[in-house]
Image (cartoon, rainbow, N blue to C red; front, top):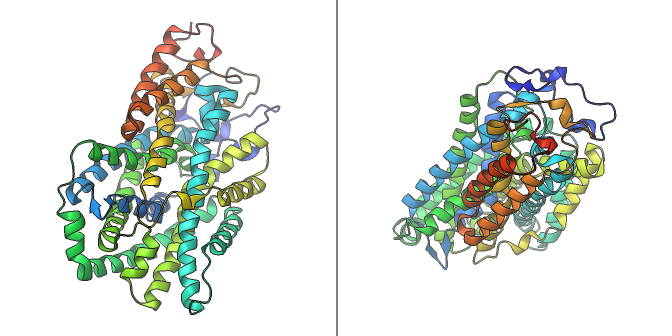
Length: 465
């Protein structure tokens, strides 16, 4: 029987005894959810206050001049955050109401076999981001070590490895370790960034005005392209929204959950993006850590800021870049949580993150985001069409865990739609996410309606015979 998840208690889910899915991927019971709205908001503030987002702000400065001025930057940011929050609140409802994680949600549209491909498309970018954030954090840790040793130690690679090992150990403690890390670090880092903001306004306002604020910029393709990069940066996270909402305490409306995304992301991401653009405009360097060292010409302050950059890296990785790929590894290998999360950490070590950002430009990071968002836009569109249009927000949760049930195979309609959407997205990479999102959603509805008439995946949908 299909279950209306608006009134569904996850404590009632009966998982088939022969299911091959690890228990860590079972529906999260309401009694096991410990994250309240305040902790959840701080979690997203902590996620927004990170060097990756700051580097995206720096990417606006190419060859010393901005591609968008300050007003175009803020307009693009607000539009992107509004869309991000809306998609977040729509896609998190399955996890919030049923307690299932993203990799199980995928089975509804793609099937057990198809979910392997679609889950990898989410997991691989997260691992690269994990490595990238850790590399930036390793750069900050190296700044601390240079000052502490009076310049005798200078090795970013060693700092990168050490930081990654620390994160692996912290991640063994799961989602519950995130709450206190995020709440503490997000507040302290925001205070540190306010200090840097004041210095930039006081000492570098002329360069910032000339190289960013007063530039002509563009309201054309670069403007919309930056919105796509902005959204692409969050595409992987709101795609796996169920992984986060399943930890959230029950009783919150869709509007309230949407606000828990919009305002923290607006505050944190908007401010950090601004700092990144200001740093690059002031120094001409795209790596925020190295730009910090120039702007804050004080050893004590440099150590202080660098220390909280390192902690911020840990915080954002624990939220955005560890949980999702760990669930993917668990699904594919049947390993328990701790060995799976260790593998993810080791993969982050070999993701070559230093390739994405050079001192002179961080355009590689933006291109990386646009490329993977060409696949993630179609996936989230397919999930939303499936849940809201085809199934009218009703799903048999236990059947998702049945290895021999209706969702056990591969849904060709979803796979074809995914690659049709991605193919269309690559026709104009600067607008990859939105093109892939629209094309894949329309394709999935039409293919499901008119093709594969005997498909088991039509069971429980509006097209069931």
